[in-house]
Amino acid sequence: MFYLFPLKVRFFFGMLKKSFVDKRKLKKESAKKHNIDLILASMAILYSCVLVSEDSIYSDLGKQESRLKIENWAK
Figure 1 (cartoon, rainbow, N blue to C red):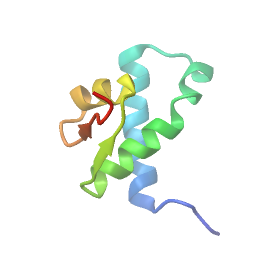
Figure 2 (figure 1 turned 180 degrees about the horizontal axis):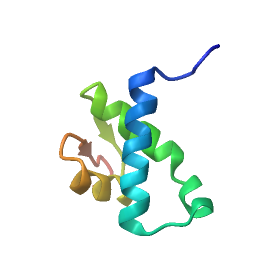
Figure 3 (figure 1 turned 90 degrees about the vertical axis):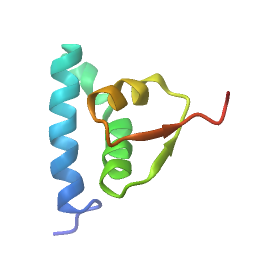
């Protein structure tokens, strides 16, 4: 079977998503629209990358997960 993302990314994504959904008290359908953001954040954290974005979701995730490094080049 082929997986697009390595196991550690999939596992971390699941933990990050659950924490994010619980913190924001989102319903299942509302949570789906954040999947790509959470995947990008998971990969940035696990591979020690800096995520460049102006999206406020990453600021929220940065408060939740201190290893997420974010830069906003739009300022």
